[in-house]
Image (cartoon, rainbow, N blue to C red):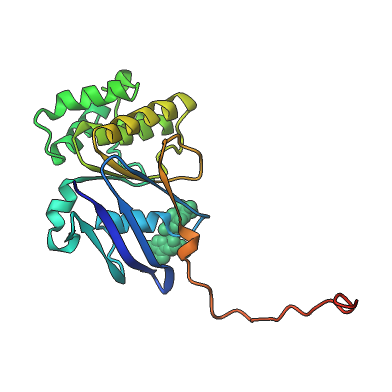
Length: 227
Ligand SMILES: Nc1ncnc2c1ncn2[C@@H]1O[C@H](COP(=O)(O)OP(=O)(O)OP(=O)(O)O)[C@@H](O)[C@H]1O
């Protein structure tokens, strides 16, 4: 059974230490929810997990093997969906999706692309060029990527942004099915996404305490301790 784990991860962006001493572990069928205020490092951690951002310290491993020893293998087992929609404006929705499915190694990319659009509830956008899609339709198209080609680990950065309630419910089902088949998922979110049994990881628990602030002592209020 593969386990995806990170140990003692430290992430530096620019000159800012975003998180340090962070450990996580995801087993087949498990979901990890990344929580924390804006700027706490949720997107950074997902990019580290995807191999897109090198941690300053610490290690990622898959089944006990360091991800850095097999970066191509790691790329082939993940779907990373960032919060910017990567839709090519001149290609139709189905062409966009077939392109991604081809990269993901699908045997019949166009058939998979149509099936994925159906599953996300947007078969009618198949032939619409990317530039004419609404924000929510673009989002559904990006999320359709994760089912247009198989991958064990889904890394999703705020997947529900711009989605309506029906689409969120649909996507919750899709995640549940993925997990039921032994798939793994890590999701950053500011809203509730129903994922039974998911584990929470609070990024602000790993944010270093700033050292440059005045350590002003709080003085006791005079007379407070008087008996
Ligand atoms: N390319 C970059 N160069 C320098 N600093 C960056 C870069 N990208 C992000 N940061 C900084 O890293 C920190 C963490 O950002 P990150 O996007 O990971 O947070 P987040 O928890 O996903 O935030 P949000 O909830 O707003 O999406 C922030 O202080 C941000 O300014």
